[in-house]
Amino acid sequence: MKKKIVLVIAFFVTLIASAQEAKQELPLQYGATNVGKRQDAAMQKFRDNRLGEFIHWGLYAIPGGEWNGKVYNGAAEWLKSWAKVPSDEWMALMKQWNPVKFDARQWAKMAKDMGVRYVKITTKHHEGFCLWPSKYTKYTVANTPYKKDILGEIVKAYNAEGIDVHFYFSVMDWSHPDYRYDIKSEADSIAFRRFLTFTDNQLKELATRYPTVKDFWFDGTWDSSIKKNGWWTAHVEKTLKELVPGVTINSRLRADDYGKRHFDSNGRLMGDYESGYERRLPDPVKDLKVTQWDWEACMTIPENQWGYHKDWSLSYVKTPLEVIDRIVHAVSMGGNMVVNFGPQADGDFRAEEKALATSLGRWMSQYGEAIYGCDYAGWAKQDWGYYTRKGQDVFMVVFNRPYTKQLLVKTPKGTQIVGAHLLHGGSLQVVETARNEYNVSMPLVEPGEPFVIKLQIKEEKGAADKYRDALT
Ligand code: H79
Image (cartoon, rainbow, N blue to C red; front, side, top):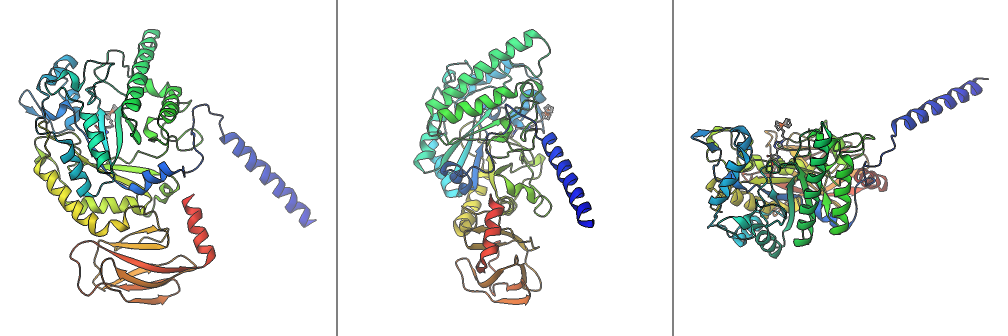
């Protein structure tokens, strides 16, 4: 009798659960295109690169945050909006676009020395000025005193250094008369259709002129006009993937049938990686859900300046160690980090950025083994810093020195530590203090900077499988 009741209850529980599941699953025409993480070689390369350089370069570098004698503290690339400058007046800056010190090979060398494996360059920011000679607008480098195809030179020089080039592209375009923030009438709808065709043309132009492009990173996609045209974002993703085999696309481009952005109405990531982490990072303990998908964060060196701003004293400027902390933090949670640079109007980098690049390069050349190709380790976070993992190698990146001189490590069930050594240094003592708990001793001579310990581990079969499951 009891057994019967249990069976009946189980039947109804299953029925209710499957009914709920069926209710939750909305049929979508323009939802996610991938099931889980992409595992092809191009995506693997995107992921293994881990560290990128963002470059914001456009007309906004000329005023550098100042308009008619007033300095605006907001992001310099938004100055046109802060100072309410009409488009024709803003575009008159093109007459001053003559970056005589621009040397793409020098930029690429700086990037290489910094240890970045890819660059994300603003082909066109919200202002509408194109760094390539686009056929579809007059607002391009071709119509400036400088004339030359800046983007083409960048692609060539960075590729020659073995650095992947990703294109930043703002859909929102303040220079285009057909752009609409919302669609409120038939006339808006017709104008915005023309705008989407213009954008399609520009994107096809970029994909065909620069076929080595590895990624498109869309921005300026939050307006209602775009949310009401989710079909178009799916169409862009599809078209670019047909034109450029292996190309990766960020989630920020995408809206689904219902205008839901980044994640579709069924909760699935759209595009190939989540790109919502702008100037912020997931919590390393509470937000482990991010390890389920690919993601990329981006950061500024001052609080919020992407384009060149003449006065960096108006906000806090991060130190090289704080930048390195964010890079490691991202990788430890299975993400990439892109560090932003805003070159000057003359084509050179400001002294602070050059100094940061040098510091970053020094650390990456020493400890890059714990960054490139590394992923979330799946071990419980400890106070001394972050874990990263590549295959059987688990790295401890130590940012905080304990007075106890012992670094606590808790391993997952079935995982043993059999050795530890300082990267580029000697072996360190490991003491098992409890089941799955160890003390790894601090090096006798402290490196005086965040350093890396490489652990040798032994895993029972089940433990390794569990780790692999976490990656899929
Ligand atoms: O290119 C850099 C920034 O210029 C750009 N993305 C990075 C990589 C960026 N800045 N802000 N944003 C993206 C999001 C902007 C949101 C806002 Fe608004 C714009 C807040 C206020 C104005 C749009 C309008 C959203 C809310 C109101």
